[in-house]
Image 1 (cartoon, helix red, strand yellow):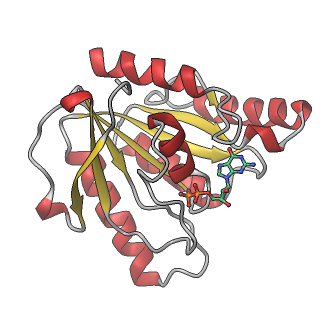
Image 2 (tube, helix red, strand yellow):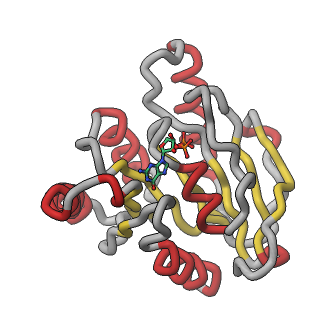
Image 3 (spheres, protein in one colour):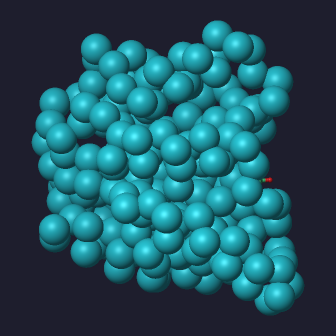
Length: 198
Ligand code: GDP
């Protein structure tokens, strides 16, 4: 899937202007600063695929990337939970996200990124709620695991496992990754390849 470069092909700022349904999609979402851009770049091996953000909470659009000539489409969703975001921006985000998640027949899975270094925040719980309510298959992927001790990571995994167990839409396997060291990136690629074949 990632042997050839992935290419950006569409940006959408409103639910009325989504690209045509062209193949299986996996969406990446998480709190601002969770490491989403870094992970997308590590995953594809492309340094500037998703811009590593200097100003969190800025991107409000959905960005679509075609991988392996459309075998899989990656959707980069705007980060949520940015404290300084205005109320309108937050509402826009929720509206766009919810509409997209609910009404996208080609969306096969959502990867919900969680920072290894911080506990599950209310915005993360809200995202889990939203995904569960929309009955979208989602999978949790922990980021930045290079930056925590083993015991802290185990605690984080157990915490998230407990949350996931109660959700029918959640994938039981929690991915553990670092864009810095590349840990878990092959496993993530394998998971996405399996999703593309579903
Ligand atoms: P985004 O806002 O979710 O797209 O997050 P970014 O990819 O822009 O990353 C946010 C910050 O976390 C940046 O300062 C990154 O350097 C840092 N970061 C991202 N991934 C990792 C990682 O795997 N390990 C460590 N230690 N830091 C990371």
